[in-house]
Amino acid sequence: MLAIRATGTAVGVNNALAQQEPWRCQTQAEEKSGVLPIKGTKGPITRDIGWRPVGSAGEVIPKNYDDARSTFRASTALVKRVHPNAETGQIEVPSKTDNDLTIDWLYVPPTVECKNLVIISSGIHGPEGFVGSAAQQVFLRETFPTLDLKETGVLLVHGINPWGYRHHRRVTENNVDLNRNFLLDESQFAAKPNPGYEKIQRYGRVKRPVRGVFGAVWRMIMATVVSLLSLGSKNAAGTAIGGGQYRDPKALFFGGNKYEPQSQAVGELIRKRTADFDNVLLLDVHTGVGEKNKLHMMTGMNRQSSNAADRPSRAAMEELLNDGEVAGKHIWNEPTDDDAYRTYGDFIDYVAQMVPKTSRVIPITMEFGTRGDSMGQLLYAGTLAQLENRGFHEGYGKGRRGRKLQREVPEKYMQMFLPKDPAWRESMLGHCRYVFEDVVKNRFCGLVAG
Ligand SMILES: [Zn+2]
Image (cartoon, rainbow, N blue to C red; front, side, top):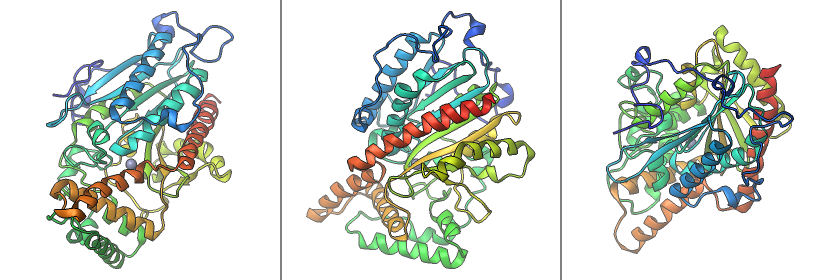
């Protein structure tokens, strides 16, 4: 079963809101913990716990899920040594095949007033967790010790899809893409969103072992051409293919028939912790999509809203992201019209609607591009994803060719999310530093203070 050790039991997200006991943000000052920052120091860490700036990306990119989790736990234990009111917790994720899968988290309350909350989450797509864990380490070791925590709290959520992280699969053990599973209300699963998927469904899954690549390339081309012709734009075609589907549990981008336990538990954790804050910044770390070596800051669908309650967030997003885009520090991808490429059940949209309307919320997907977004690259990525998924469910053909594919497909698939190229890895480190120092510390904390 699923349990949140530190905060009680996990329950359904939306339906059960009314029955939840209220969680209140308590500052350390209120709790008289005696760990207020020492006068004259800027951050919460007032004694040396041995942290040094990260020397190279290799220091923070973990070997595997278990290694990543050990590092996260060790780091958060150190935070608790200097910050006794910090909380850590583990959400156990049930599995038919694996023991000991957990989503780990750290929450550090502000010291004086609950105004701003910075959330950094990782590993909602398994193999993207490697960079997600690395980013969280960069934040903890370099930015966190100098962050002014008087009015700012921190919530780190590590490895939201631990099974996929351990097995190098983007999806959960149930083949569910968690970033298509966060529909705003559980009743929406039955409505099977993404009508465009109907147009290309027949080019999707093949129920035979993988024996070659040509068929998969051909089906990707057909899916692209058919969706382009019938839906009329590249964005609409992209949504049909990759926006999430709720029909075939063994095909790509399956959003599920109900919330996965991970979604419920993480949703509940975030709903509780955001309740009392005026400003919430969510950075959900991903890799794969987009231009190589570039960081894409992607803001969610609901930010198009003309709802007055959203406008302060829009202004805040401009202050956070515009200058960085002008300076070439990142690419700001924002859906601008109804025809934009969209995904259903996106985590950041879910968080945005969960935060109270009186709060300002800035939900951002941080996507580290690994290959490029030309038609050729999209075709490559789509084909490889098809082959990996089919190989997992149907196996590979016999003989030397089958064995070669069995070895190469998962390896190449993994490299779409974690390239071996040392230059890519160092650029990832640079992007992390820029976001945590400039966007989080200087802008988000400065912005909301002013
Ligand atoms: Zn992702």
